[in-house]
Image (cartoon, rainbow, N blue to C red; front, top):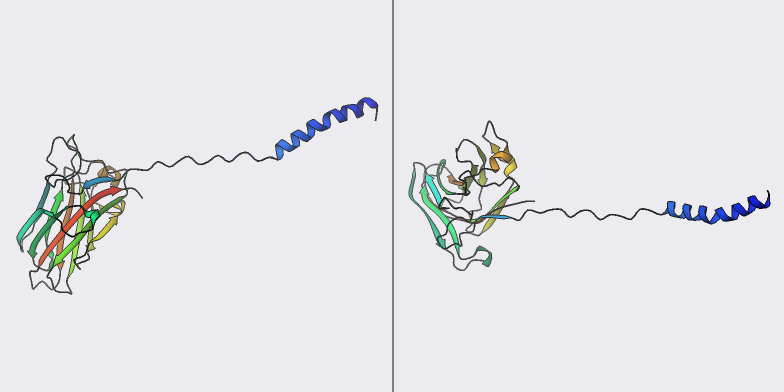
Length: 231
């Protein structure tokens, strides 16, 4: 090897070493982008002065409607003041009560309105949990079960998401439920569950007593903190 070749080799060796070192280094780890979260939406906590629902609405009264079937008497639905309750329930809740035949058919209900300012319905499609707190007061026989059906429906009433036969704790203590509306039965023949959730006008609670059908016990369903959230 000539002198020039040796000299050239000594000049290139440091450059080759630097290149090899840089190739052996790993690329810096890029932290994952933060995941956007959806702020829970309060449908009703009943703390407003008139105990109305909490959906912002300029063209409706945000009232709570209701209904009942035959074999239901002394039906009443009211905003009630809570006393000696845990702080997270605030000072008010909503009560629907009656005497109802324990035949698993007769029902009493309360229907919070969720229509938005454009009169179409509130958009709940960004959420996958429907949540509410409740307690049941009843003198029904201890073997009777108290059920609630939940319906989320659009203004036409033909597009609905329904979950039936949800057994409630009847002990008189507060309890809560978190349900996935995308698992509800979709009665619509034209809209997907997401499309129904984007135009919800009413949330319906239908309460009934399942027993031997021979008595008409008193039942009161108190509910509070109705929200939509994302999980």
